[in-house]
Image (cartoon, rainbow, N blue to C red; front, side, top):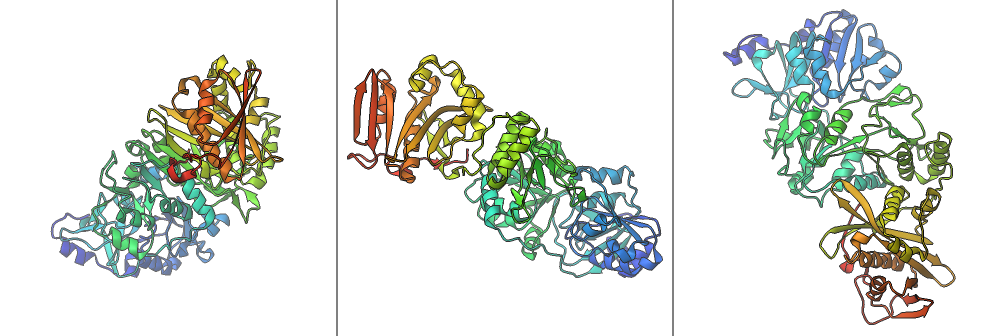
Length: 638
């Protein structure tokens, strides 16, 4: 390599035609090709033309957009491709055994080059035109390209007038290039995929995990785009990711993404590459908001963890009932790659307030296959069950971290497609993952619309929602930490135990004839249910009998009132005519809660028990409960 001296003269001396430049490639050598939309199109075309003069030439790269002639069957004796991440243009060659796949964390690929474990002879890259100082930008793909260019013995650069000049740690001086080929070609584009209803539901569920001020990582595709589409109401979001697409532009321009709360490189969208439309490529050009760096930095779990409230969203092909994630293969067929999934899952898990998320559709092949499976059949594990925290489908969020295999299986069955839940439960029983008497209401649709946040009397946020089958552990904790008096006032008898066979019937409801809403609160890193209100509908009278249990520590703090108001909203929306309740005469607090409804109430006393009846719509007062959402709290995804 020559010195930086007179870079213009060096540039002129190094200029060559593409076909002449690639003659530097020799038989049996290892050749790197630039990534994504930075595929050096002229050089790749010329390399294919020179194929008859080559033999056993090894080609390395991560996913690329555009042509991959070296992976075609006709060049089997000339080239052998080795993919670090399998794209659509090389998938058939790998499936047919004409190409190789090397599973590796994206963050570690540069080390393979720098350590000479994979000694690169030639790097074919694409860069922007040099600036006045002779520095070319790696443009839309810095990722592993930077390390390849700095490690290869011979570097051939396609200087494309249409390559954006991106900013960050992403420059190479003309003196570091051995040959230069000029071009003026549009970058390959990746059009945004259309957002279907299932993707939007997944995006909504993922967005429920994103707090204001979070820093995000997500990839490219319909689910990441659906997540971005659901973030319009958030504030001060940041980006630290390996890649992104057009979806971030609207959120940046609307002020949702401003990177102001980031704890690492505040004010910067940190990335290693981008792929999208011409609009995206023009947007990143010379834009100081974007900091492009090598995956050695962006995907280093220790750097990722420096971002507080880091939310990493990654895709999966299958998840088994213990939480193992298959992401690079369908059965025994390799499909994509490890990529940065594990880097970001582990980095976000170590972030203060971080949330690692695996997102996938619940089914495949027209709802004929479940993607929540009893066990992985032939597919490899990319993310281990020990690394997984949140799994999201269109049916909800399964929080697996710190949960037993039994709890995991039940949580994952709950977010599987309803048509497969019964089958999954039977498989789980056969594998002794769950109780043998475990019940399930497979067609019960969890009413996500009844998730809310309300302030208690002291201003503490109370999360109100319908009960879930996965609440069994928290309901157990509620029962065993309540006083005997509170339990007696709920059950009208001394109840010493609440075994699984009873408790599971409390948390498995059909949300129509039976309904339970819970009040959940966060205490540090611990979540607990502090109250529950339930009703059982009498179809003959269209009235529902209600019962309440509020933890002693949260009595007289308005939790009971919030639960009743919420239960009233739900019941009225379902056309229930009224409530009935039995309350011990000495339970003045509960009687006061009922009288706050503003409805005309009938009561009768028998053997120290008040029997209450009230019908909705009666009475002169119309409370927040009667008005529904008009004066209710904000919506929540608890």
